[in-house]
Image 1 (cartoon, rainbow, N blue to C red):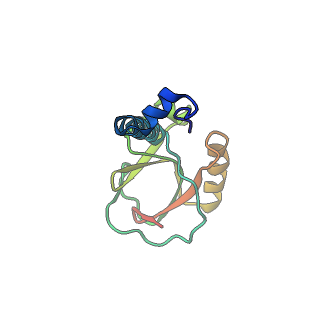
Image 2: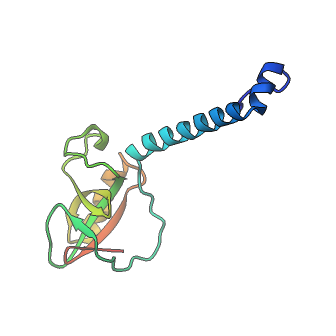
Length: 143
């Protein structure tokens, strides 16, 4: 990141001054803060391939509790709640979500069959390449 030229006497003086350093540091901080805010608006989750274990309390789903094992396709997370049909879903509908703390985790489809979930995954990956299959057991996310 270029902040100025020390070969230019005026800029060198400004870069050495406390007010100049404070001003530049504040500008850099505000720039990163704005970037992170925009990035979080469209934050996607990537499958890290970890073995899934039962998750602790604090996870709730918008689709209600299902008995038995259920498979869904997770394709996005966000700190914001979006309604079905939002442009961020790129035409994918219907979309469901569950919450994990203050994070909304968006899913597509629901099936009891692992095979069907793989077919759903192929469909979703055409739009969201980092989508992955998640499991719920008796309405609780299995991690």
